[in-house]
Image (cartoon, rainbow, N blue to C red; front, side, top):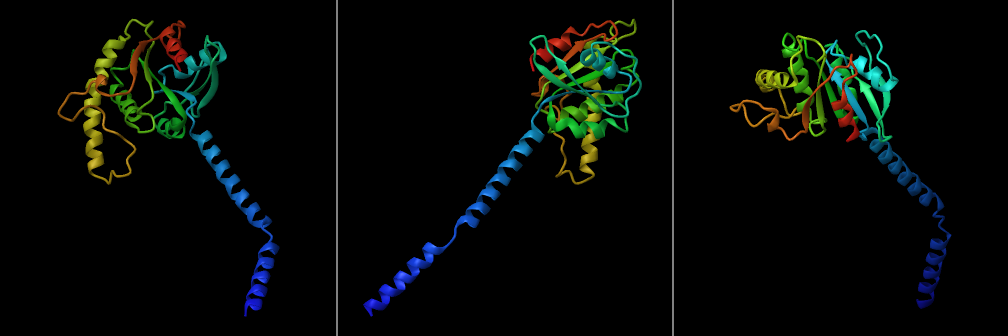
Length: 244
């Protein structure tokens, strides 16, 4: 009986030693390598590397974009696709700049496309026509500030065309937008209540519906800066870009 047990043990030992583990090790290595590649690809895809130039049509976004990225202002027309370029700061740091089309049918689409890689937002406002277009200006700014993808990155509201006589000051524009965002906020809340908002990407702006909205109520770093792209007076913007 003891001899039989020894023979069985010897056979089992031989069988284990004869197993080729190479295919198993190769399969494990392939799985591990695949997981590493997927991790690196996802990380690269979501890295925040771009400054988005946003705003309505004719606010001066593309004109300023050409100044910063090409070294000269050029005559521009309403963009139907994004412009992408690089801006080098005085400290030698290179920033990717994306000029998002301002047309009402395109701006939302392109903002959604680039919002997850944005490290900062420049929101251009036409200081001359802002009062006439205040609803659209406030609505798009609300979209940017309330979106969970961009609710924690710095925003500069660049009040362009300050060289013109009828231009509103950055202080006046800030006040106008605070009042208008109160209305936009109520409209958005009503829209969310009428549908299933469990998958909404928006956060609520401000303290509560019973408190008048002010930009100081949100934790996001937002500043209003005067600008004249035509006269190449945008020091407030370049100073901001140096901090990124």
